[in-house]
Picture 1 (cartoon, rainbow, N blue to C red):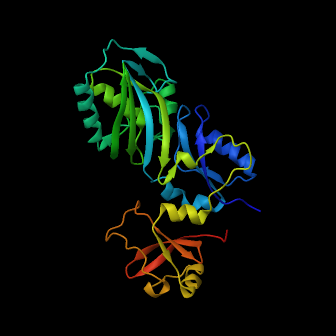
Picture 2: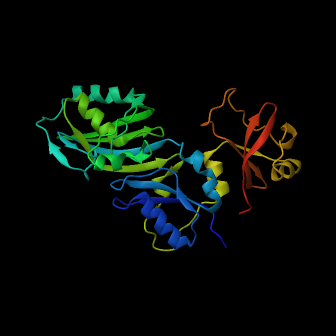
Picture 3: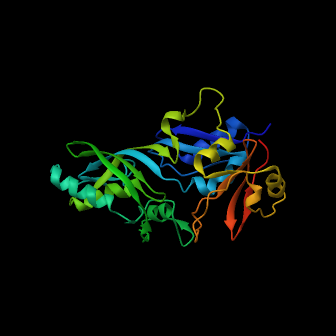
Length: 297
């Protein structure tokens, strides 16, 4: 029987996200495994593996906000902005509490961020990290980001321990660069741990590699925790199964309303019947249409 669901993994520092996916494919004996948000090799913590039918949720799970705990070392630069790069020391004394508070507040207000040059972003069809390795420094455009929270946990000498919650597309390595720049120095990450991806937290994650058969969260439960939901009537189920448009009478309770001008990032509504995920749908004028259908689990 094919496996379907989400595996919340606690990735150790070292392997790439693709390494973990490859291991999961061997363990679960299926090629239908992907992930919802890359973790750098140095980073540890929550990595969502999507198996079988759960891969249909990828587009929306990757949009989820993330929470991290990290340590920024000031006075030492890195060409990758983390401890795995080429390090270079800069003469710098520990910041005063006032200077650090100012720099942190500036980062809390950040709405645009330049990604690290060593990243998976494509420039003219090539990965930025591949260009950086050849000595070409790709000019990357700023991206819109949000900082939901940024908390100082400790300052020990030149090491700044932080906990933060951020939007998709935010690079914590870039935080090390920008925080240090405000303080007049260089900086890099010595440690990075993802505490949560959307509603999925590290406390529920499976240590990797697993000691036994990993437990998958069902596709229905994963969608219920991640997306707004609505319940179909029997007639609604029949229409959804055929890919037909639905009206309000096809739901046992009114589905959540979409914004008047939804964007590509507006989440769809998960439609259920008898506790099972049937489809993802969107409002379209006065009707509702199927975005993705799901096979029975």
